[in-house]
Image (cartoon, rainbow, N blue to C red; front, top):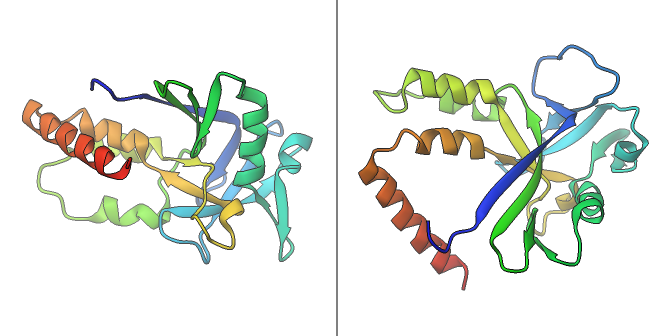
Length: 194
C-alpha cells in the first residue's frame, strides 16, 4: 500500500527452537526450547539446551540453574553487527531513516507450538482451507527479540510471531476482503502512530 513500509524478516539458521520433539542433532547448531511459565500469552522464554558458540553463550543469563537466551543481549549484538549510521532501532527491527523498511531478525521453530494448538483444533467450516491450514502448521512459528514492556523478565522474553501464517491467510483473501483489510490496517496504524 502507498505510504506503507516494507517488512523483512531474516531467520537465523544457526539457532533452532524446539517445541516438543527433539530434532536430528547437529553440533554446529545452537538449540533452544520454549519455556512459557510465568510469561504472558504470545510470549515465551527460550531456554538454552545446547551450544558450542561462545557468541550465543554470552547472550545467555542464568536463572534458577537454567540458562535463558536473552532477547535484549542478542538484539544488542545484532544491532552492533548490522546497524550503521543510516539505520535506526524501531522496536525489534532495524529501519532506515526514511522509515521505508523494517528489518527484523528472528528465530524459527519448525513445529507448531502447544500454546497455539487451539487454532488447529477449532471448528472450521470452509476458511481457511485444509491445505492452507496444513501449510501454516508445517511452517511453524517465529520468535522476535522483544519482551513484554515492564515485565520483570522483559530482557529474557521473546514475542511469538505468526507473520508467515498471516501472509498465507492474506493470500487467500478475495479482492473485497483485501480492500477491507487494507482499510482497517491503515486506520489502525494511523490511530496508534499518534
